[in-house]
Structures are given as C-alpha cells and as structure tokens.
Length: 425
Image 1 (cartoon, rainbow, N blue to C red):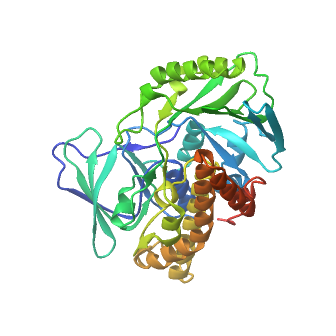
Image 2: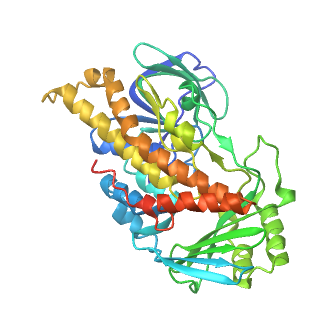
C-alpha cells in the first residue's frame, strides 16, 4: 500500500511555511509518474494532491506500446502486465451500414484500471512524498523559485510552500498553467460519456478485440481487461444528463438509465445493452464535456517560466480521441526527470556530497531542454486528436474528407503515434 500524508494545515496554521526543492502539483498519472521517475534517479520531490484520496475516477486507461516503454523504465511494467490482457485487434462496426472491419494491433496495447496504475506507482514513492488534501490556490514568483499558497481540502487555515522547481501535473484546469499565462483549455460541444467496468463471473465471450461500435446517435467502445472484466464507454446525447457549463460530472446511475433507453431505441445489440445494464455500479463515471488544448496552442504556448513548467493534460489536454493522453503523460514524466537528472549530474561535477542547491538553482536550463524535446511530439499528438474529434463531429462530406486526408498523412489508422520511444530514464 502506498504511503501518503494528509495536509498538515489546521485552522490555526495559516502562518505555516515550508521549503522544498521540487514540488509537483497534481497526484494523477502524470504527477505520480514524475515523482517516481525522479525518485528512481535519486531526486526528492513533493506531490500535492487536492483530493483526500488518489483520484481513481475515470475507470480504465488504454496504454499503448510507447507508454509501456516508460512503465518499464519506471520499474512497474511487469507488475501491471499481470493485471491486464493484451488487445490484439480493433473490431470496427458501423451499425447502419451493416459493415465491419478487423484491424490487427501489432504492438502492445492493454487497458489498465486507473486505480491499479496509480497505486502501483504510488507504493514505490517514498513515504510522505505524496500529500493528499492539499489544494494550491495561488502561485507567486519568488527568488529563487515560487511561493505556493495552499489550503486543506476540508477548509480552514492553509500554509505557504516555497519551491525552487514547480511542475504542474494538475490537469486541464491547471493552476500552474494559469501562472505561466497559458490560455484555458477548451471544451468540446456537450455530449454524455458514460464509462465503467462490467464483470462476467464465468468469463466474457469477447476475446481480445477492442470493439468500436458506431450507430446513428451513439458510439460504444468495449475493451477486454481480463478474462472476466471488460471496460466500456458510451458516447451519446442524453438531454436529461445535460449540465451547466461549469459542471463536468453528473449522476452516473441516472445517466446509465437514460443511456440504456437510448441504446434500446437505437436497436443496439443485446450484448452491449446487457454490458451497460450489468456494469459494476461503483465503476460508473460520467463526463459531459471533454477538455482539450488546440494544437496551435500546444505548438506556440509558453510551457515554462524559469524553473516552472507543466506536463500531462496541463500541457496538452487532448481528450481520448486517439487514446494517447495517458501514455503521452508518462512520456512527459520520463523526459522531464531525465532532463533534471542530467542537470543535477552536471551541477555536481563528479561530487557526491548530497548538496542539490546548485542543481536546483540552475534547474531552469533543464526545464527549457524538456520543453524543447517535448513540444514537437505533443503538438503532433494534439493535432491528430483534434482532427479525429473534428471528423467524429463533422456533418459535411468535405470536412470529413479533409479530416481523413490529414489523418492518413499522420498515419493514424496504422497507429503511427504509438511508434515512439522517448528513451531511457
């Protein structure tokens, strides 16, 4: 089990102040991967997560071969492979056209439970390095580094944390990205996305294929995770699940009822209806908007200011259109930790006296190198995801053909985006 500390602030701790070398805001996939990668290189960090527990909502995450290469470098791949089966093909079905295709997946692809991924990484991070229930509400420049104002999740007095290096892994609504002056992430048009797991006690009959079923008014994805569990999502318009623009999550059980009615009305195959009906209630998760950063922002945004930077969705939120959000975040973590480790080695000059002060004061150079290395890769992924989203929403044939041409050039159908190796840690 991972070891985490709760936020030390109490109603009488408003003047509490502490100092750290590297602070990571956000304890999701990217934040924990960054902390673990730094730990593997002997570099300490502190993760601040505003939730009072690890954020395991979202069900499952598809990890392509590029992500598995990172997990191998982090030393957790073997353990995680035991929890998820290989996916060997995409089975695409167009219900109205009565057409289907089968596309082999020639590189490693597995659907992991988000909970398994987070907890496997967290338990290898030193005790006390993950601080739960700590919400960063403001960031101010300092010399050196920055000053963070924090409040505990339950309210009351907060504290002040000084950081020489700050890494924002805090998602599409990133407080660190705001400090850097980045434009806010944009929402896609409202649509209901229901996600969850279904357990088949005697085994499921779906083999090792990922199903993508397209109907006139719905889109279903289903992936085997183990011999007895599948992960699924349903995307459709469900008026009763509509929420205000400020809300991202709605009631899952009510939404499942509305989604089931929609699937039945659309004559969806019985096996899909039964899968949604029998889903594990605690696994259900509903989102009504997908947040993304347009590719031109990713190509041009200022991803750093001194020794402050962003990674994961805070840098390049792209939705789930090509299934690379998680794997790209893992790549960010490895490249960032490697850049910082190189800077530390250069600052030490062969010494091993444990003094990281020179390295931390000069970390801006490492951050600049990280941003330079990642920008082209994540800009291309963001473009590919953006065009795929436009294709799925397109109504005119001209728009569809233009999107298909761009995706063909990018090698999307052949999963060209997975043929990437960000190197050794």
